[in-house]
Structure formats: C-alpha cells, structure tokens
Image (cartoon, rainbow, N blue to C red):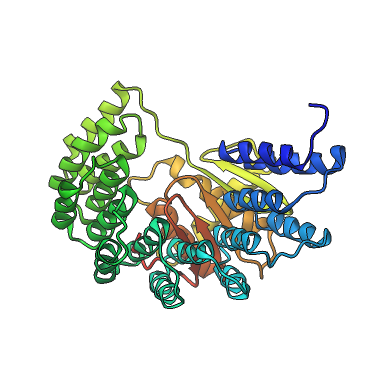
Amino acid sequence: MDARNVVTWNAIFGAYIQNGMEEESLKLFVMMLREDDVRPDWVTFVRLIAAAADMGALKIGTQIISHTMKLGLNISNTSVANGIITMYSKSGKISEAQQVFDSIAEKDLVSWNAMITSYAQHGLGKKAVETFDKMLFEGFKPDFISYVAVLSGCSHSGLVTQGKFYFNQMTQLHAIAPGIEHFACMVDLLARAGFLEEAKNLIQSMPMQPTSEVWGALLGACKIHKNAEIADYAAQHLLPLDSNDSGSYILLAKLYADVGCYQNSAGVWKLMKERGIRKKPGCSWIEVENRIHVFIADDISHPQIDVILTFVEELIDRISAVGYATHSSCSRSARHHSEKLALAFGLMSLPQWMPIHIMKNLRICSDCHTMIKLVSLVCEREFVVRDAIRFHHFNAGSCSCREYW
C-alpha cells in the first residue's frame, strides 16, 4: 500500500485487536510512528488503550496515555476516558479506574457501563449496584450491557435478592428482553448461592436454547456444592454443545472424585482420552519493565527458569510452616502451575512496595489460590490476579473474593 494514513492504520489496529493480536497491534503502532510518520487520532488511542487493557499491560497503557498528552490531545475526551477506565480495571487498578470515572465531566452510558462492569469484575457487587442505581438517578436509561454488568456484580458477590430485582426490572420497567448473557448471570447467581433447583428451573423456562455458558455456570456451582445429581443433568446438556472443551470434562471428573464416585470420575477421564480431548494449557503473564513475561505450566523456556523453579520450592517450604499442604490430588505439574511461576518471578523482579499483577487465561485452581493467599501473608506482599472469571486481590493472607468464586 503506497499511501497509508491514520484511517488505514486504525483499520489495521482494529483487525489485529479483534483477532486477539493485541501485542502485535502495539508493535505496529511503533512502526506507524517511526516509518510512516502518521499522527494518531482519537480512534487510534481508544483502540490501543483497549489492546493494553486486554493484555493487562498497565505500564504500556500508561505510556500510550502519556503519548496522547504529548500530542496535545485532551485525555478528558469521554471516549478515551472510557477506554482508560477499562484499561485500569483490567490491569487490577480499580481505584484508579474510579478516579478517571469521577473526573469525566460529561459521562455517557458507556462510562457508566464501564464502571459498573469494572466493579463486577473485581467482586465489588455492592459498588456495582450503587453505581447502577446512581446512573438511574442521574437520568440515564440502562441498556442490554448495563444489566449484564449489574447482574454480573450481583453474581460475583452473592447478592441474590438484588439480582432477582434487577432481572425483573429490566423487562418490567425498561422493556429489555433478557438475553443469554442475562440468563447466564442469573443461573450463576442462583446456583453459586446454593439454589441449584431454582437455577435448573430457570434454565428450563428460558425462551431460547441455553448455551454452554449457561450449562457451564450450573455445572460449576454443582462442583462447589458437591451435587452430583444436578451435575449429571447439566453435563448431559453441556458436553454435546461444547464437546471439545476440556474444562467441562475436568470439572465433572473432579466433582465425581469429591463426592466419592471414583468410578464415574475415571470414566470421564477415559472419555476425554477416547475423544482425544486434551487439557487446555494454563498460561499466565506478568509485566516487568515494559515487557510481558509469559509462563506455561512446567515451562522451561524462560531464561531464568532454574532460579524461578528453585524459588517456587522455597516459597512452598515457607508457607508450609503456616498451614499450607499441597492438595493430595495435585500432580508435580501443579506445583509449577503458570501462576506460581509468574508469582515467583514477580517477587524476584519487582520492588517490595509494588503490588504484583498476574493475568491468567483460565480460572485459578484452588491450590494456587491457597498458595497465593499464604505467600501474601509470609512475604507481606499484595497480589492481584486476573483469571478467566474475575479479579482476586490477595493481601495479608486473605482474598477479596472471600472464597466466593
């Protein structure tokens, strides 16, 4: 292409980000500045901030914001500010996200939705509800996304009464027909709170076919409450919908083992093997000195891997003195889960005063969750972990999720 302008570059950035190539889009931004000497516009920065947010790359995102200011562009622009809220939130900086939200002079519905979603993802259900109610008081009409956000907030915090209220309100007051996302939130809310039969009945009453997300929410709650009967029912519907998702099989196998149905558990593992289904590898990453370091369970590619593995074992020895015991079901590989490697590397690389932020592509396992809680106690450090479901803030031996995850 002979003449590339900012519109062309923005289209390329959008395509890369849409296809999960956030890091590549940021590299292209540097190329745009150096080779084409193109001046970025608002669209450029909104998309790049979104890329940094998805990666959880706070320092890179902050540099993009600084570059915006150097060009004389006002970051108080509502669209850019909305992106910054999401970037801070996805990087674990919920207080900073709130500060940006509070600073927006002319908030739009996207601003409110971004903040409510941020509170929900961090398990701050009451704040999500308060912000949603304040949005209504300010005269904004909620949309489809608004209700997904507030229902998600209720779900992550066990606010059953409030969740039911908003689920009814969206149709009765605002004539918004519930979508799959809303039903998934409600099933998750009810089931995780122990109302498994009610959640099952809600699924049966849905006006559309339940998706794997809906059945997965029910199955996940059955694992928490050790209800094999409803788990069987959920699995019968879930596995045909998502037959290659290893997570569903593993969840069911572990549930059977938890309730003593070892033959059933072995049968699920056997079925996985027969169908050629492999466990999706856990991947965690951490930002250190403007570089993203990626870890996979039993990964040996990192140049400091020997030191990292030794330090993981040292941490396990230290927390064993305060009650940590590796779960009997954990394999050797579990001792070197990706988040454990990232955690050890963060402790080695970042100053004592700095909170350590870790991102993971899957849900954090119970063993790693316990380990990080205890490491936060013995090392007197703060950790923020973003997994596939939500954020966990670890400090002084406890987690913000209050074991409700």
